[in-house]
Length: 532
Image 1 (cartoon, rainbow, N blue to C red):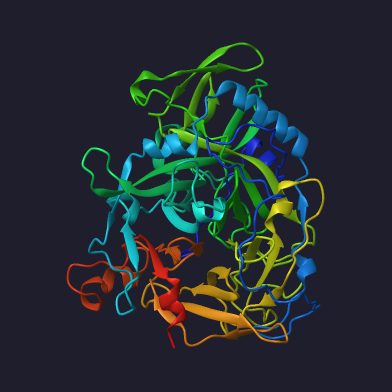
Image 2 (cartoon, rainbow, N blue to C red; image 1 turned 90 degrees about the vertical axis):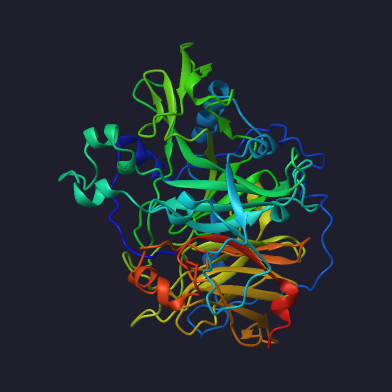
């Protein structure tokens, strides 16, 4: 969630079409080489505690009390058929890469157990991966949602690949937008967009991470690769093209914050705060540099006019098709949106505020997956800060995740819905397994976050299970990795993101550490559950 606020006013003619919230049904296509494709109709459920019985409420009750599941109802995106056509056209022009190929060529390295320590006086996690230095201190990309192959597949393998985590980041830094905006739009000028990488709003990217053995040395390593998310449109020349998602630092209304992500089967679900969900497909990861040499500007296919195109992944200032050349802000891989889900209830949360209404459409601040129930459930919750007139501490509910693959009818929350038992709100992420709900609460840059554990009582209320466990500063979304028994998260802060990150670095932390640099980390569930 946010560390600061920035202005967002970038709406080109093509972006305006995106803000209509597109959606589609993806055509059938072979999965990326897994040997056991996901079929929700035959998938064997895990034996575990049952979720609490459904209940209903129609108004604010109290922290931990029941909320109305109906408020969370999702409807399929309005432009399904049109987006289907756009993605099919893009698929005919651009080559694709599967997840396994992407990971095999991962070009960035994370360091296990480096000196960076966002935990300070909090207990160390079971595992910690420190991001490459430029990602760790980037003013541009802010980590948020977390998921992995344990969500995606029952056997926790994607084909032959395992030990995979994903995290999402939104573009939260655009100097041009703040220091020299166009008077008419509040945005960068056309000249600045053409010349300045930092002036381009790139939106959201997904980072694929894998722990593995180096085939040459036999030693363990952690490698990762970024993938730009996009949406498709048809430009003025009647060519299919794509753009970034247009990120927004919550609570600004326009854009995607990517506060939560879930990978389930072929699909990647991304939380869209004020709308619902955006959906992406692992079978449609477009590769704009298939020979792996950025300098060659590889040949792409032709659109409906038969004109051949090429790709340029060296120029970081452009995105989409320009004069028969494809650009991607310098990223090799782009994954276009294939569908959308929108809240059916009206959205009446106050703009420009962290306050939340107690009824009506919620905010989709974060999402996660619970595979310990029958059926598997997608959890969706809110980041809220109560204030006068808006007492809600945030709601959380669950959906049967397989129902989201149909995209032909509304999908209602099922199983349970609650107000979160956080007196001051501030939930950054939540995940459930075996009847326990884990909630991350960030306390800012000056102290470790809180990891809460809750269970449902006989009346369907969420009640605390022991005291909060101290965790990383800037703790974000949560993801359960079943095979290792770990609860994963990622920290979002960086040096200079707040006064505390600069002033207190040398005095509040052990020598040689820096608590305002980003790490991907996991706590053992068995250790958490054993805490008083």
